[in-house]
Length: 168
Image 1 (tube, helix red, strand yellow):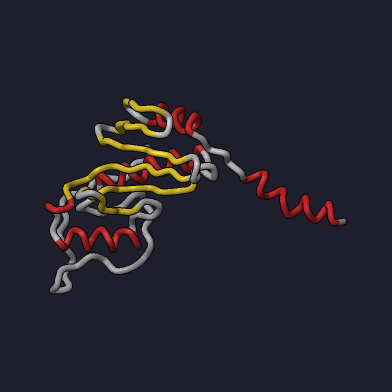
Image 2: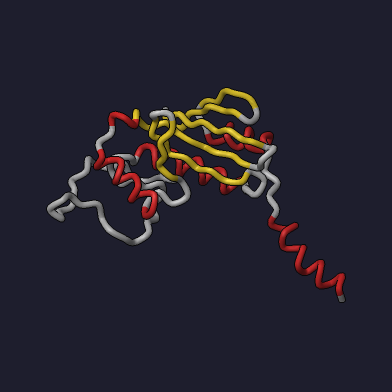
């Protein structure tokens, strides 16, 4: 009975373990990118002329996919605030973040637990968050309900024409 209980408790972890690694990531990035360079654990690739970077730390089971958007010092307080609101409502699995004076769209996750589908979806979301910055700020067609960005008078902001979300 103890053995059966152990197997029933342990089995789900075995079934859902993805065991993602740098070799698998390389193959996925090659399949979704227009061009790619780098080495396992540090890649730069392009999706429709948008640069993306991925780095991994296998010792600490971490990875990130990111895309540089703009010089953060050139952004208005309004755009920075809109990006923070988007982190809650429309950026979903990616976030807008600032590091070393650059605004990024970034996906950060434990490495081994990722599936191929999740990596492809993450690349798509990083790409869409990049191209939708300043308009919908959306990484997917899905958004969580909440406040709409408005100016101080409570009127909806007029945004430039937004690109339609399309799955990569």
